[in-house]
Length: 336
Ligand code: KG4
Ligand code: ZN
Image 1: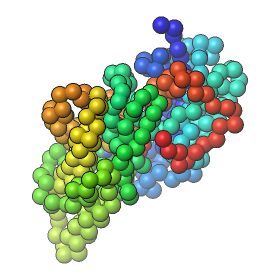
Image 2 (image 1 turned 180 degrees about the horizontal axis):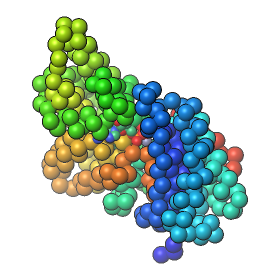
Image 3 (image 1 turned 90 degrees about the vertical axis):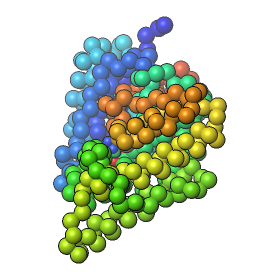
């Protein structure tokens, strides 16, 4: 097979990342410069701060990605970039950098949807088979996506309000946990018990849509009420109860979707919240009942935002000759 090398960019939120990917399946380098520390004191990502960090970091990330991969610009076949969804100012830095490299080195430009990229993080575990289903859970999105064929994505269910990761971050703040709180809430949850019986919104509905804002409010109200009456609640049990409610709904809907789409060959779990141990364990157990469905979890290191996942998806677009022009713009609310 001919060697295909793609230089991929990701800058949709608070990670500046540049990667060199071979044949959409091998990471030669994946530089991720995180800005989390700069946003922590604000309790979430500040778009203006994010854009400034991306500008400061991006050229170093390119140099590092190229030198670590041990390749030169003349070895590259294409440049790929996340052009949405995400923060417009943040996206624009990656898009501008990618266009500049593409123009300067006469390389084709491949626009990549960030969410499609998250799904393709799973490509580093196994080739993706079709049709498949992806549970995509991140800080900004919670979606069940049907993959009919390479490059064909259809959302069959999505959150009607908060994303799962957003709910983790917001309840984490109430527990005094720094942004992003998901990992620490997950850790606490494993030390506690589900004693609060928080609501499982839309769990009984036929639709594959989700809702997490009621759960978030129930959690926050419980903690505030306890504060008012001078009662201290067990943090581990609070975390365990919250996580049990999130995982129940995510797992139940996913199982129902697998029942409704029996032709599906793989279940792909991807996005920042896919790193959640409770969710990974629960879905592993549920998948025992589906002999013909393979469970493919994005590698832990590639669940969060990174450019290697963008390079993997870009390879599919490359094969289909889906190239962008140099007037490519960022699209903050890009859909599949
Ligand atoms: O995909 P991602 O890196 O960024 C977006 O595209 O949104 O996802 C970040 C989200 C944050 O909300 C973070 O709290 C959450 O993923 N997260 C987790 C865990 N690790 C990260 N949520 C639950 N459990 C985890 N272990
Ligand atoms: Zn993301």
